[in-house]
Image 1 (cartoon, rainbow, N blue to C red):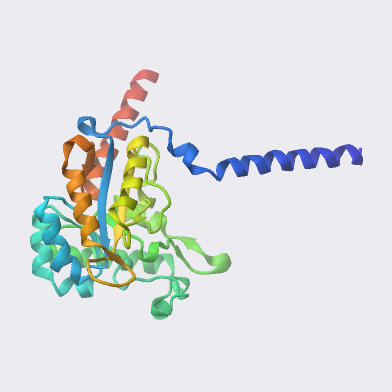
Image 2 (cartoon, protein in one colour):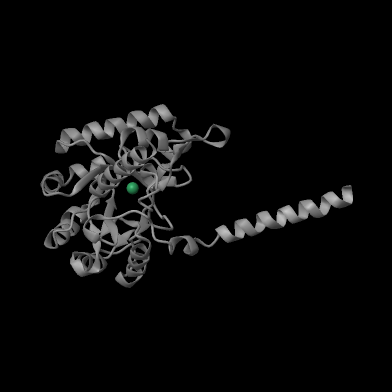
Amino acid sequence: MVAFKIPCVVALAFVLLNTVIAQDYPENNLSERTCFSWPEGMKMALSLTFDDARLSQADKGIPLLDRYNVKATFYVSPPSFKMRLDTWKKSAANGHEIGNHSLVHPCSGNFTFSRERALEDYTIEQMHAELDSASRLLKYLVGTNPVSFAYPCGQTFVGRGINTRSYVPVVASLFQTGRGWLGEAPNDPAFCDLAQLTGMKLDGQTFEEILVLIEGAKKSGHWLVLAGHEMGGEGNLVSCLETIEAICRYASDPANGVWIDTVSNIASYIEENRKKEINKKSKKDG
Ligand SMILES: [Zn+2]
């Protein structure tokens, strides 16, 4: 009996291992086209997003985007946001989106810059209050309530060890979307959780590197959300103006089939489309 059980356990482990190995190849899944349809025969959606309200965004990035009439989403940090408030107000009136990025940018205290406001020391209640205050402040400063959020450092937890909690439900209750950082694949509009959108790295990339992501998203019909920080200049977290300009040029050509728009505009289309699908299904079932 024991002798029989051991080969069974080994066989089961082998099957499980094969399943895990098969799941390690995301390309297999991504090549399948989503069942979702974008408006006007577009092949994919693309959002340009930038974090922290860095001064280069207001000074160099927005004038560049405006030359191509491309609208982007900016997840802003209040201290630097206030330093270019007039530009941000005009940009918001001109169709760019202002999103919430918290008040004090809490990240893991493993980053020394965050040690005094470490996520490990936060509670869910504290996070809820902070995000709500940041939204109220933005409403006061620009007159509109932010509906999009980006997780500072892309981290979605508070607490530590067995007391760790996800604050994704807080974000889902306060916003239409939440965006991460350093995501590995674009979002499937038919399935993705809007409170956990992936944001793929725009910083430090050439247009050729981004084009590979765009072509992959076109094939699968997915929503590519690119995430960056500084717009132009030198350093670690810098999106090159040349890359941004090449993306704008490419996405503005209707022959390329790219719907480039703010996160909230694309998320609203997805929500509408999902509602229609549910109605269609309930009519069929009824
Ligand atoms: Zn940030």
